[in-house]
Structure formats: structure tokens, C-alpha cells
Image (tube, rainbow, N blue to C red; front, side):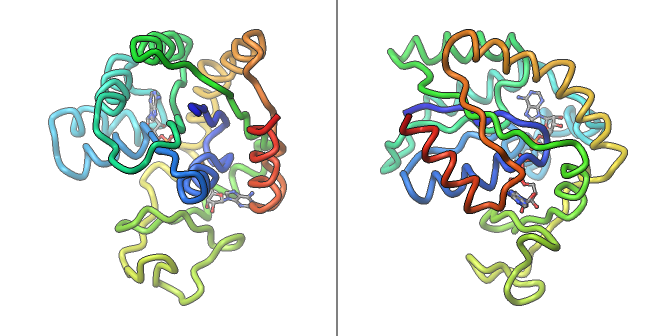
Length: 217
Ligand code: ADP
Ligand code: AMP
């Protein structure tokens, strides 16, 4: 099963994707994570996109489509539960490219889950977010703190990080980009009969339960 998790920055896509990976052996393809990894490893592409990401703008379609194409061709070993596209596509051009890439492999999209959250909640979600730099677990100061302060619950690492773009000014720009360039995908996938809307304002477990229902329906 191949699915897209669609939603504004902070809607809970990464959180729910990690649960689907754990529970269903799916493969999470997050273009944001891939771009941050390129920055950390200091590649030319990573250097090129750093300022764009910090400013909350979208990087070019060409770059992210290239990243996804590479991952669709990669060997993902034991994980065979299908792909979760997290933070991709973000433009109609990316959506078309994804469809073509999947079609080349004789595959398609099974569902697009929109996690709907209002803007006020997003500020709190984004400004409270931190992640484990080693295993990628996602936390929040208030809604999902670590059990032991400063230590990752999953892997025990103390390498907990906040993103450079997780501040109010950058979020405002990211939201603008979302409504201008990504939100049109909601109508697009609705028209294709693929869209399922989940109330992302509920607590994490309730969101997970509704995502499961949306995928079985
Ligand atoms: P996205 O991948 O859509 O940007 P994340 O999954 O990283 O969003 O979630 C953003 C922040 O909100 C994180 O700090 C996460 O722990 C928190 N969060 C995610 N889902 C919920 C939820 N249902 N209720 C409260 N906080 C949540
Ligand atoms: P995310 O981790 O999904 O919040 O993405 C962080 C940043 O990476 C975004 O604000 C963009 O600058 C960039 N980015 C991630 N995915 C895409 C995409 N599909 N298209 C363009 N830019 C992207």
C-alpha cells in the first residue's frame, strides 16, 4: 500500500508515519528528512538548500523529485509494507511526477490522508517540537516529553535537537507556501477519489486510530 500524508507543517505527519512504519513495516519517505540529512553531511545540494529551508520556502521540484526517484529505486530490504510519502508531494508538479514514477514500477497511490489541524495549534506544535538526532523519534515539550529529561525514550541518546526552521517567523512563511502551493493538492486528490480527511487536532492515539480506519475504508 502506498500512501501520502498531507498536512501543514506540524500537523503530525512524521509522528503518524513513524507509527505506520513500526506497526505495518511501511517505508517512510520524508523529503524534509532527506534534505536535512544532505545538509548535515555537507553535500553541495545540502549547502544549496540550507538558506531556502531556513527561510521556510520550498526547494525546487527538481531536487525533491530526484530524491524520491532515488528512494523508489533503492533496496529497502525487509520492509515491504509500501511507501509513506511524508512532506511530498508539495506541488502539483511533484504530484504528477510521483504518479509517473509509481506507474513506471507498475504501482499507484492507494490513499491520501489529510491531517487537518488549525493554524493556532500549529504554532504550539512547531515551537515545542524536538527530535532525537540519532533515531529520529519526534517529541514535544508539552504533549510528548521524554520520560527522562534530555534522554530519548527509544534509543537512550542524549542528542536531542530542535530544527533551525521551527520558529514562528519561519512557520509563517511555511504556512504561506503550504496554502499557496500544497493545499491545492487536497482538491486534486479529492477529485481522484483518494482523499481521506482525519482530524489531526485529537490526541496522538486518536489520530492513529482514525488513520487506521481511513486506510481500511
Ligand atoms: P509534521 O511531520 O507534520 O511536521 P510532527 O509529526 O513532527 O509534524 O509533529 C509536530 C509536533 O507536534 C511534534 O512536536 C509532535 O510531537 C507533536 N504532535 C504530533 N501529533 C500530535 C497530536 N496529535 N497532538 C499533540 N501533539 C502532536
Ligand atoms: P518538513 O520536514 O517536511 O517540514 O520540510 C522542511 C523544509 O524542507 C520545507 O520547509 C522545505 O523548505 C523543504 N522541503 C521538504 N519537502 C519538500 C518538498 N516536497 N518540496 C519542496 N520543499 C520541500
